[in-house]
Length: 367
Image (cartoon, rainbow, N blue to C red; front, side, top):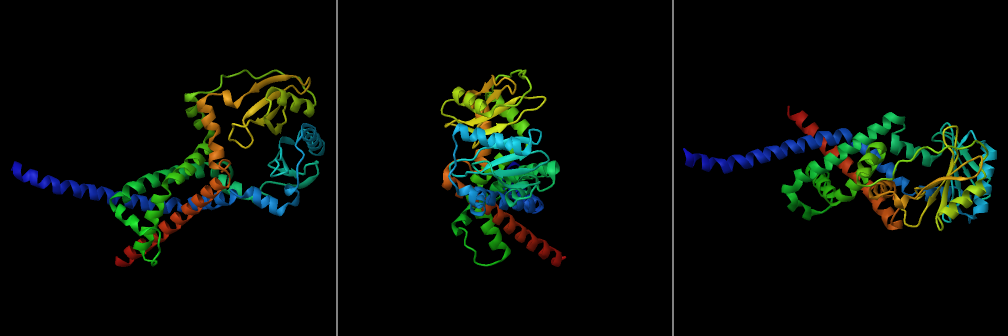
């Protein structure tokens, strides 16, 4: 009897392993079909958003003009924005750069506007009133607000699981990778072969792109995790006096506090917070920086400072999530990587859907 058991065990184990992999492939197929349409939407819009600034420069001539980014010029355009829209309507003004000279004002009620380097309003629109904003909302929230944000986030989590399960499921067939990405026919086997090989080749950049997107969907939870590895000390909300912010003074205070840093945003205060300036230091990856100086609107005094480079490793890593996801590092080479990663995810989803549909149709006919 013992001899019989010893002889049967090697035969039984591979059978169970094979059955487990078949089950995993089946789950991968059903789950992939369910989430692929959402992932394809997110992937296509993400790829297009890589070239958002290029599109704006192409369609708005003022974005291609040279920009005066001196403190005096930035203060003047900030004051003009304040006069044009009113303090109660302004949330923030993102300053232009040498490569993109438009300033973007964020207004209440999901409105926004572009201002030229000398403060002329080039365009003003409501929610999703421009193509680039519509694409961003479709990518980030699926045009459905908070509900869409969470749908996109959980779909991203499902996408990560699909990548991992897919890699596990195809490992026994790794010899098929030699076939590469050549499409010889539209048969289900050929579609699955390209789907498998492409997914294997781009798994690493896909996981980085999707994981950073999920982190941005749940920023509070992600920040709490990263902060375990180093975060700034909590500070009490500063007391301040009401008044009209002197923006030249505020920008000068920011330059004095962080010499060499580039002013990136002016943020208007309110009843519960003072005004502030966000800056980008050379070592920061975030395009708008995470370094902040807080200004008392009434007196112009410096109320506080936050050096993004002294906030601890965890918070610095958290601040790197957005520029990694949105292709704000690595120049045109990384732009191309993120763009092609989005296209690869689109092709993966389409091939997966077609292969699954063919199997479903074939099984239905067999019955």
